[in-house]
Image (cartoon, rainbow, N blue to C red):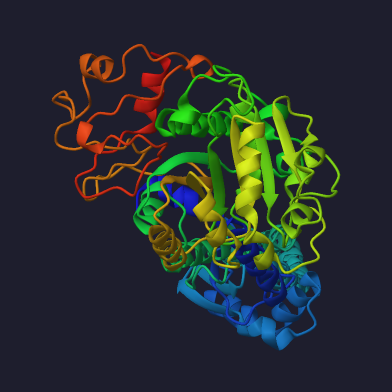
Length: 595
């Protein structure tokens, strides 16, 4: 599958993507905790503690380690963090001596912030608590040394008094004792001063910053609820994409030109893009209400294809012959679909408006007696119509039942009020259609779905040609094959398929059994005009084949037949292609028409 087709699939299943994403978001919101509390810690923080400068000799690492492992530090940290479970907090920390001068705390937690806060609280509790204990010990030592200093001072005073009273012969004997007493007093006073300075500052300090790193875990244990919800949204979106691709693989409904042509065994002569909801609610044909819309241009392209390849009575110049009995019978185009919801009635209304733009008068017959809706597309009310005509109630009043629409050149006979069995009404349609041919240049018939009712199958024998409509994503290959089989049995020429609701490009056009996608030109065989090296007809061959083709509104003659052996005198349309047939693309046909 090409990337462009993947985007088309995602656009088609956008509701599934949104649903999976929202479901994952809700599940993630319900299953993840509101805070950061999870069972297993996934972050690890380390903080080092060393003695302050100058206190290295008085601070022992084993004493600090013993104090840090005590319950006082954990209790203080729990109070600071407002945690009541002290045992759980203690289980999240370990402390060890990295060296004789360094102590390291290691904490774990569910998030980086909680882990860092615990490490900082333990560090502060250790530093503050141990410093307070050191200060108390220093104060006691100072008191003891102060008493010792007082004793030493008294001894020094006594020796100095004895040294002063002693004679010159005894003073040399007292001098060493006095000197020793003075040195002891000095040392004691120095120790007191050192302890006083030591007690005024912390004994230990934090070394460096807290080292935090993720200890392990998976993406499912993200550090915050927002991150976990973001992950849930990503997983839900990925699941939706996978589900959309799988459903697309399993969905065999027709959505592209190539698949439609292969299933119906008919060319796709028109691709109508998907209409917005507001455009589907219009009370008049889109060709009239929004003439510049891409869908309106697509309907005009469908009209151009029909004019180029249709019956002689349709492709001739409109108004060339006066309306009335002297003019040839108008062609009858039956627009049908395999099942309901294929845009059949919408195509009838817009095709009628597009044909009216060329100057032709169009008469629309609503023969869908089960769900008549054509009058709604032209913005007029319901009333007596085809049901009354075919039931025999108003057979002589055909002119009275033809109603004008808001679209110039388009008139309508509504479905009417069905009282009889619809299948019985269709059996009497021959005479009504014969009379209807005399009231317009083109007669369009809207009917019931072929696979749901037998009405369309009974009306086919009265039509000059059939146009099949199919809504992208609404028809399966089996249903398309059944429609093709039923139409093949009737022998009525089939123009092709109008594919509605397309999104984006339909992919590369393939050549299958001599059939190319596009509008079908009857009678193309091996005797066709010469083509260029790229497989397209040369401009000279086009001019020889279709001399002096006027604009659609002024066309005077049907396209010239290519091969005499395939020429038919009676009005005809595109027959079901044979294996030798060659089909022109819509782009080529429009180029011919412009010439």
